[in-house]
Image (cartoon, rainbow, N blue to C red; front, side, top):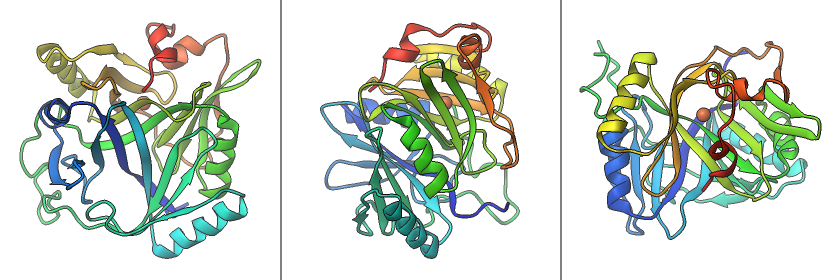
Length: 306
Ligand SMILES: [Fe+2]
């Protein structure tokens, strides 16, 4: 089917403990640009290949983690239709007025069974420094740091991911691309609304509302290698990588921002189509699914979240 309804991840609002350190990380290392600063201390940033006003919001806080993850939908009519479907599904919907974040129109907001907040919106201003569209160069100016192309996906940890699966597939028309199923039930799900192998993923976890990582897209293995070199040079704490995931086939590094929020740089990954069969992993090959070369999970993957 043509891409319609929910188009893609649009905004992630992260909590950070030290704004100056966070800006240094997300601007100098990740290569994002600041597009606005709010009176409440929030800082709005975007990656160089994004057309919309912003994608990452940093909010000063005393505890790290994620406030919300928002998806852009294709029309106001779709937004109204999704609201109806979510209410019919039995979940409460909150209205967030236009302008609560600069450049963003009205949003609807739901709290998932896993404790996470998901917003949907359609209207958004174009970024002042958007990619060129007439006789474009590959980038308007050379990217900075690791040169994050876009904010790509998020992995969240929380309880009752079965309910999340039902919500995303029934209310928002996402597809389940991959899963890890253990004898005692679902451990992890990778959901897509697009041609990407995943746009959002969840891992079963007793504490609600936790962030495992926010991922930024890079072009290829060379870019991942260059990012690793920069992380060593800047003494950025690396969790694991460069390595590869069996799930999604993406090439990856996990590392931490100065507040302890895990980030990922991610490249590759297969092209997903809605008629693809579900790919599944079980307890026998779970390690290779997460870390393809190491073939085993590290303890941090399952326990360190914000
Ligand atoms: Fe990821």
